[in-house]
Length: 218
Image 1 (cartoon, rainbow, N blue to C red):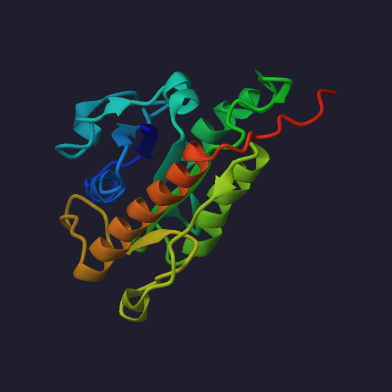
Image 2: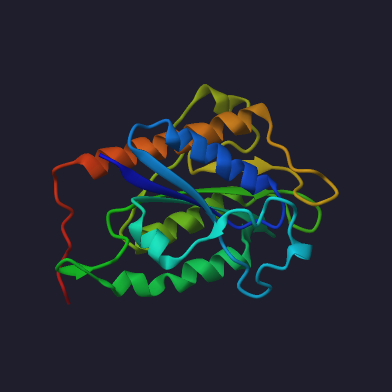
């Protein structure tokens, strides 16, 4: 059976776009996966092409309906001063009404879906570190919606990759127009692995005969 995976990023520059596409390729390896890459539209500045590097605006802006229809969502956004960037935070906050949206006999439009996350940290003006706190911030949002959280499974590559963590994929280093974005070999392997693993878990849940209990309607 087919299932849908949405890879969703916010980025001013191209580094997380590359990461999103590698994650998507990993997810597509799983039979039945229909994978689409989306972007978060800047809530203040919109699609001002002067602010974004080439390729960032190529993906379609994600809508709440896209997220409702997905069986798994994989969010990615850069870190700023040790926390999630404000644009992504605003978007996640906009999903709050879905927590109380009717679904079956209970609440939660995203209940039972799979959630995973990726980020990038480091570079002058952006602050350093905080990557696990950023990924856990995504996880907290997923749990508020009753979603199943998936990270990056342990792998020998983690011994070599900077800032590797089971919480998700982390790209380390600068992401500015002066320093062209690039992923190293280890980061590519971890991104691909997490995409594949997230899709595998999603397939197991999607194809299961066990119903997801809607919970008590208050």
